[in-house]
Length: 209
Ligand code: PRP
Ligand code: URA
Image (cartoon, rainbow, N blue to C red; front, side):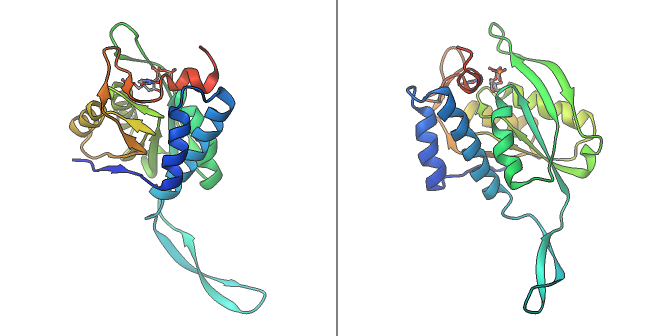
């Protein structure tokens, strides 16, 4: 079963409090989501492999470390996942970005895929699927199925707020995928919104409501 990691760094928790607040407007919400994504990226890249190289400092020859593992691919789930991309590429500038477009049908709550465009070498990359919200888990589970169908082998899922229902679905359908959250909330309401959550992440990011 994939492991659930809750990244409870104080800076992440402080910023999360602000995006949960219904009085936080679009500009601040957008900035904070990117900042949280950057801090989470810092935490989840902690164990990336490094190799030793030799460089010349102005003072002497020195051994130094460089990143050595597989290249990274970021896969935002449209729309709301887009709000996390800038923050993450600031830390991982060599990452390629693939997009999976899904929306949750408001009646059936089932995800509907409408777009997919991926780097050609996804099977050789370590992929991080990103979306601020993991509610029923339907969207993330479907996005991961799509990636696997196209050859992806190594996938992690990074969301800001998750519900236990979504975590359970991913762990059941994708036991090879580790999940990273900034917070694990109580559950879902009757419209499958996360409680207490932060509302509709896409609408708050893009000001569409
Ligand atoms: C939201 C969110 C996730 C999904 C989570 O997207 O960004 O993708 O819902 O819900 P689930 O875990 O129950 O599938 P939404 O469908 O609202 O689309 P949007 O990003 O275009 O607003
Ligand atoms: N999608 C959101 O944007 N928010 C939720 O709480 C659940 C799904």
